[in-house]
Image 1 (cartoon, rainbow over the protein chains, first blue to last red):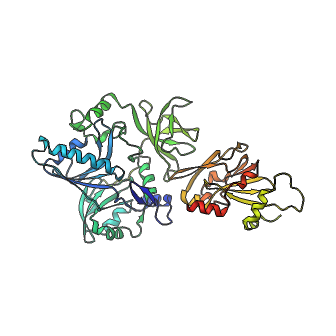
Image 2 (cartoon, each protein chain N blue to C red):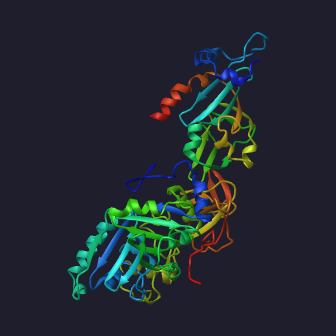
Image 3 (cartoon, rainbow over the protein chains, first blue to last red):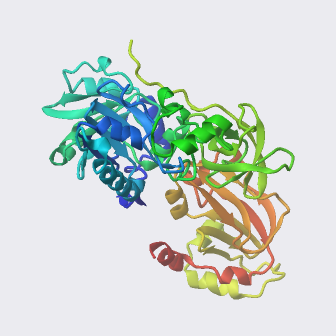
Length: 360
Length: 158
């Protein structure tokens, strides 16, 4: 057990090592307890407009019961948190944010909500906000996840493609199920009312599903090229630098009125000063904080933000930020690990091909 | 000469007394070899053989189990002169990198080249086949200042 975002959480379960656990999710299925994450509900007539002010996403264009990765930006366009926003209707959204940013996010939501509701923009109806404290959130991930879950429900999961969600009857419970996750595999994130969490977790953790801890969660997400807030994203980083320009709605790039728009537009127009890249490092794995240099003793170009020896690839993978111009794939750079320079080759992400269910 | 393993199981007091003897030539047939096992704060073990003045460096079982599956080991170059406390390499699991420090001063005489191909030996056999390197020790007094097994146990529990 380790402290994580104010919770005590398991790095691994029982005597299943983090690497075996990682492979099990890639080959079969694993269940992650992510109930520490913050589940928010926003309701009210002007909710879409409010969330389009809080994020740069095109939420009015999002189909009901669809999700998108998004970012909450500060006034400068730096990332306060990354989040998954699910639209249920124009006036109802389900928003999941990071546990490690709980305090900052909740303070920001409260301040912005008060500002919104006191303004003319809320004339058509105020926005109400509820935090689903005590609710469970379980992520069932891996190529065997769909078959496992299908055996527990009459709902045809083939219709629930990547990025979609639905209320699904599971063994007598009616649960919000979102197809997606943080591993690059097919999978589901299942939200559970407080009184049902233990029973549902038991139903979802029978063979071949294995309970999977934080250790494997980190190595799986990094292979999938996904960011971990605090490592790869922070308030000094814009979504354009982070390679998350795709989360900014195309219709909102020119004149969308979202918080932080000015900073984001500057990076969109002039190009960002640095960019997030993936790399494969020879010899030793480069970790968070390792410095990146131009070849042959050149200048420092940036820093590694996450790095591991990849269990799937057997190579050292890393992501980090480099000066613009040095970010093209195939570029050879050097990374300092324990005072020795190691060769690093920029590689497109994801490192391991994603296997989402996008329909037949 | 007794097999080292058997000597390891002797009471610590004997080993301790042995380690306090001044270093130097000890070639007579009646002088016993004493093998001493000592631990560092950083979870290295050094097994010191006073007849050869060599110390074999390992990580402890406690260290390997908290690191998890070891996937890469970086070792010093043979012939390197090291001072006690110098960083001489690292052990990497998927989770984290853990630096290895020289438990004693001396010259690295040999490294376990098997670990390049089989880093998992550190998990399977941390205090035997998963040895890291052998150091020709300068000053046997440095060994004495390290923790014995009982003190190390307390250190792990604290």
